[in-house]
Image 1 (cartoon, rainbow, N blue to C red):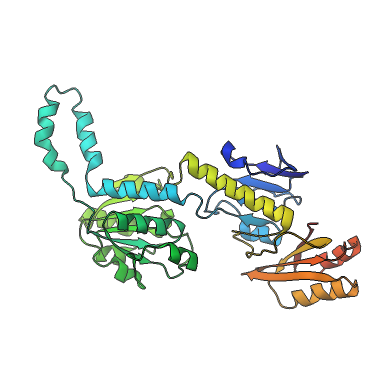
Image 2: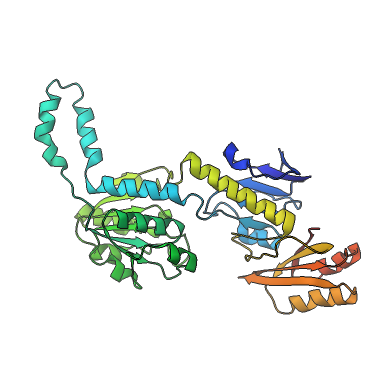
Length: 387
């Protein structure tokens, strides 16, 4: 019986894919895996029993995944599982940003006790005249799971859509409408845009990527939306652009101390993925990743180990080695197997940054002493006997 410790409130429907032979346990000590959402576990001592952690969501800033790699703990996330929820909210706010919907609603609420409100509304509505999005230019920064959906939705709204993503994957490129114009330079993307929406992960080269230079290239009175990460938009630059009128409205999902006080800024409390459907989808994907890794050793959507698949084991045994990405690891592994006269049916090796992963099937079960020899290889972080 394999065991999973759940941290945070994971939607019940999302757990429907837990396979037979798995049990939810109350404590991490002794558990094989951890399923979680947003709790920060940087200060947590992850027990040696834990082989993997899956976050039901895309961001993993709350998990010390680099340190955990050296403990032989594979950390998964669920990119794309909540993308439709984020897309729907962004498109809704895009339309709200085109017309002063909130201002009009506030006017009505402020006049709720006025018996002449109906007549006065007719006279006051000119103050809330907006513009249509059709034929307006929008720049989409990041064309991954969310950005590609937003770009396609904007095409359907009749907008002129330009996209920037130097790391665009083949899968997401295939998903893009042919009417999305790719732009290779961020400044060129921003030039002349009436709207700008950002959908990139937080990385060293994305922090502050939307700054004063980019905002100055937008058409005056532009609308900007940040439903990516809080620090990809420079708040100093944004506040100045809002004060000057260069940016008319700013929508963000991050209630930072600065954003809450900026003029013409509309803040949501990190609810971009806040739908029942998205939470269930993330939970289901996370569970599937955990189960496939624990049962078969396959890795999908890991943030600290490479993607690696060998299907279901067809031999007597399957062994997985989690180790540093350094020279001669394969040579040392195969030398141990050769000394043991082990017949390897299949073997694969993948690497990603500092971590590497080697998995092989053998015709016979390996003796504990052989597993111990593999484990003692320098820079070997963990050896798992899967079958």
